[in-house]
Amino acid sequence: MLSGRRRLTAWLLARCGATLRAAATDKSGLGPVTLAARHGWWDLMEQLLGLVADTATVLNTRSKEGETALGWVLKYGAAGLLAGEELLRLVSLLLERGSSPVLPLFREQIPPPCLAAATGQPQVLAALRSRHASLDPDVCRDSCGRSVLHYAAAKGHEEMGVLLQSELGAEECLTLTDEGGNTPIHLAAQRGHDDVARALLQRCADPSAAIMTPNGAGVTVYHLFLRAGPKKDSQEGVLWSLEKISAEQARMPIKVRLGWGGVG
Image 1 (cartoon, helix red, strand yellow):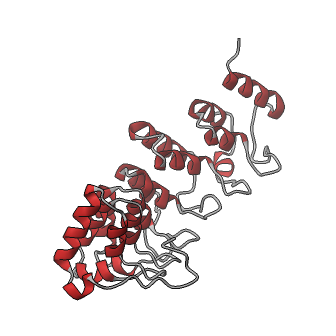
Image 2 (spheres, rainbow, N blue to C red):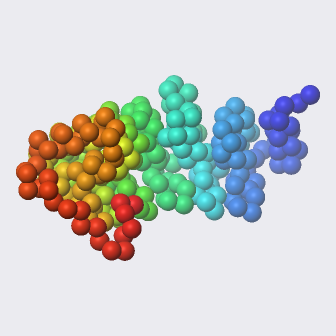
């Protein structure tokens, strides 16, 4: 009896013929190759690619939701569902077959390098950069204004965060803000990755300024450490911060601006 994947392959071949084209999409603009990637059917995705005449067109045709095969491979990697050599192999395969390393992905218009940073694998990011993908925050940000460093910090990838901080410049951690006014350090502290926040802060010329810089809601990294509660990492973050800031700064109340509703 045919497996579900083989039945789907047989159906696609019967429906589309021997060669798949970019026009073979549904009403949402989703093609068979991208659909296979959405479901994590990597073997089927590769089989279908072998039947495509113009792979670059198929791989760079986005659905109405901004989906592509490369986008889904990177998204699975960012979620930790695909990693290591297999993730790198699939990314390299799609790039070789014509996937754009710069085409914005999904509704958030995420540049591929941002999702690569969220995987925590420097080799995956290097594969995109070898195809001339830029990390420059002027061109590499999503629709919320988040850069590669924001993505690495938010996912808690210390090695990737430090690597990107060295690449972009230590002070970028102070000046790179998203539309909510959050620096990468804010996002790391906000999401409980206090070790990542401290690693980035240690490389800033003025850690106290970075710790006490408010985001758009008026909340500082110090206050985010405090708000995280009794977790060991958070307590260490608070104690480390107290060594860097003045007593007056430590007593500073949170000045949350009305209308922001928190740290975002």
